[in-house]
Image (cartoon, rainbow, N blue to C red; front, side):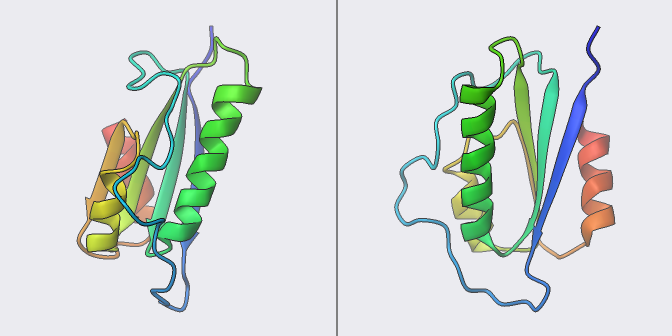
Length: 121
């Protein structure tokens, strides 16, 4: 019996710099082998505040690792909470395969984001 594992990565810009947009266009940022996953064993969670460029690189790396380096029986889902990144997060959300996206209009902080994700899962 495998218990669900939650991996949390917090991506924030502590000084509030808005530089670094996600890559341009409407093309998908990545394509997962299975999406959506109906019975995941692992939930990779991401918390962000502005840095869509860093979030994009990190999500790509996580998906590549989970799809290519982990055993095929390891089914996973992705949850993402964005802390007030506005239009950038809206555009980013349209281009990623995430089972549980949550986009807050305000920066609620990391503890509130974690609580929101835990309640949702």
